[in-house]
Image (cartoon, rainbow, N blue to C red; front, top):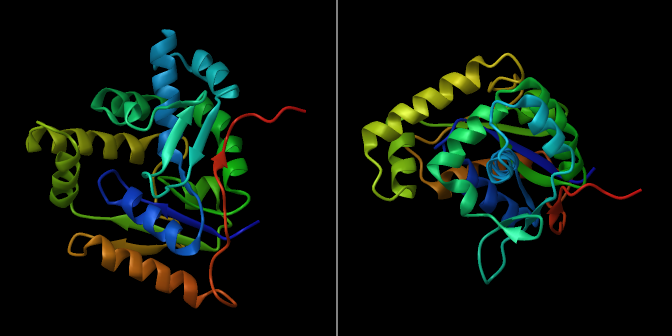
Length: 236
């Protein structure tokens, strides 16, 4: 397995920005596990499958043709679903809510577990909520990134045009409660994960802290080149 770095934490903690920049430093692809659930929620909506239909979602997840492309000079990392760029389509408030609902279903999480592990086996910077505890429990470099509710809400509001801060904060609190209390793979900090509170830190400081922590544990110069992260089912 290549160099594997996992970053867990709640919504709005800055995981996506930090993961992308850490990945760029080490020459690794990014595995956004939240985007997998978002893409499944989008695919279900397009096919008329309810977000509460566990059996239907599991069947859909079994052949989910998702692919991650690394950032280039032309633009940031992209999420491709069946060859279509859905990077922006999966970031709407509606799909965020759908993602939260489908990710709470035990059978759905189980069906996507192998996809996530396959995506990460050649090395990557993975971001999510249960990576250090469930998906990659043996990862050598684990971090749990968090921030105060107020800071996280302000960051998320900046991403959503026209959203009221009170509404964003309410949605975050609801999402946190759902993620922490679900019976299967709840959001939690792994015992061996480094806690990083970004409430009073900018992205540069957080990235530097993680890069320094990883580099200090590498036997030599850190990093391993990586191409696109492809989760499409492989033919026999």
